[in-house]
Image (tube, rainbow over all chains, first blue to last red; front, side, top):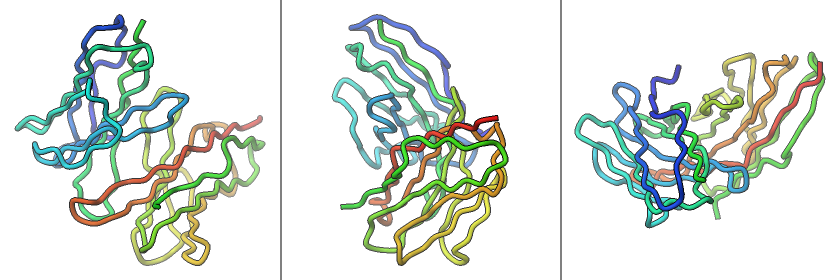
Length: 113
Length: 115
């Protein structure tokens, strides 16, 4: 058990809809990362938050947004969903010191129909 | 440009055989290096990491990896593979410092184990 909790585990929704994915990091970890994993794109870094502030941005679409709350949990909002957004979305957390690893949740599987 | 290459997309080994998964990186300074494993339907689990010191690092589940600076490699090894080792393996390289720190991921190697 990594200590990172993601909800929901599965999500099925229609094109054009909006969904929110939730992540609770490991106790003590200030950094939260969001990744998208699909068969054709592999593991894609989306965005990182550190102690409530955006730290780094990766290949995140404008239709996607995220935030980290004062209690350090994070939400990833996906809007105007398209079929191609179907993927596994992972949250990871770390203490964000040099050399510190990421600890991953079990992911949310999003299916857009 | 910084990059991580896992040359083998898919590997099949027999149970009990030895295993080596390759990882090569391109980075100007000494990186910190990770191997992760992803079982079907699961998140990525850290197997081991190299940060500094002894270049041969031991991880969980009987895995080890060796950092070879001259070859820019961090290959993962296991002397005897178990059927439960069938999974996707990812190599990652930590680059940059401070607020510019980031992880660069390989595309993964899928391991199948024959009984």
